[in-house]
Image 1 (cartoon, rainbow, N blue to C red):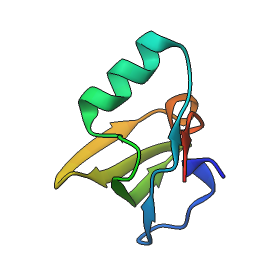
Image 2 (image 1 turned 90 degrees about the horizontal axis):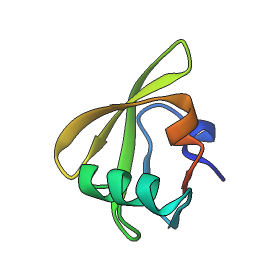
Image 3 (image 1 turned 60 degrees about the vertical axis):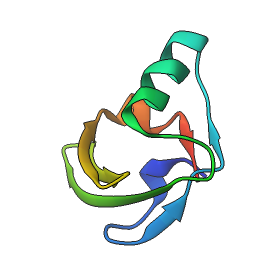
Length: 69
């Protein structure tokens, strides 16, 4: 399921990062790698603030839809 379906505060394991090669590379540079953990901190009008690799990152709803957990 996409990251947007996860509940706030629950830790999830990234199963797949989709999108075109450019998008994949961008997300991987932020720390969204297969096997890594991601936790949603908060959601503001569809956009997510997540904790990934001990960093807080804001991702748009469109980007979050490409991250499968």
